[in-house]
Amino acid sequence: MVKVIVNDKIMDRSEAAIDIEDRGYQFGDGVYEVIRVYDGVLFTGDEHLERFYSSAEKIKINVPFQKEELFDLMNQLIQENKVKDGSVYMQLTRGASPRNHVFPGKDTTPVLTAYTKEVARPVESLENGVAAMVADDIRWLRCDIKSLNLLPNLLAKQAATEQGCYEAILHRDGLVTEGSSSNAYIVVDGKIKTHPATNLILNGITRQVLIRLCEQNNIPFFEEAFTLEDLRNADEIFVTSTTSEVMPVVKLDGKEIGNGKPGELTRKLQVLFVEEFESVKKAHSM
Image 1 (cartoon, rainbow, N blue to C red):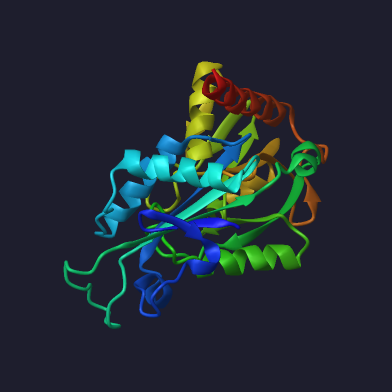
Image 2: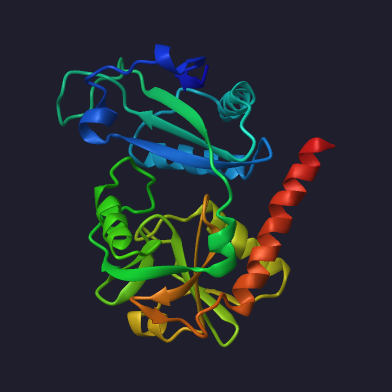
């Protein structure tokens, strides 16, 4: 039987229930995280939990758990469900109360839920690269909060899917921000550029790992906004996310990027990223 988490308890999924007036359901009033699992081991779990607490604080939800408690709960859930390569989805809402735009009183308890699923690494796409399209960024101005309000992201992703694309790369008035569910990067003359971690993007955990790996390996990395023209003329384009890892974009709006194959620097970053999670797995097994 598949297990899930509701608040501080692990239970059968068939037993789990959420109140009809939960504010996450009615208002999207909550935050979430998706954490990668490689060979049964949480990858960058600490970093994801840090962002989880940060997002909750920004919308004034007090997380009713210590970080160590949550970390232990997630690991227990992975073990209970025997997840090998997959992910943990966790979310926290402000709780259940009579519908009202104003926050409920302090007696309303936030609701934590979490579940796991098997997610294979997208090996073929990582090897061959994917197509992307450009779309207007119509999201709100607090994209740094990993909130449950994802309708603009869904519309962009659906538009990309309908065009046979893996991702929609978003822009505000010609300045590229990020993808609908990823961070976006260009490579020009051996230098990597990506939008700074402002309120206009989510500071992705894979993004943070990538910055560190570039620093450690003397790869030029710049947090600078770039234009649609820069994007279209880039030597290489790639996107990153928890489940996409370092994903090469080889076609944009139907036109090939470079020679239409994953670029040399993108390949190097892929190797470094795999080495990173392999080292985490090795350390966990010792």
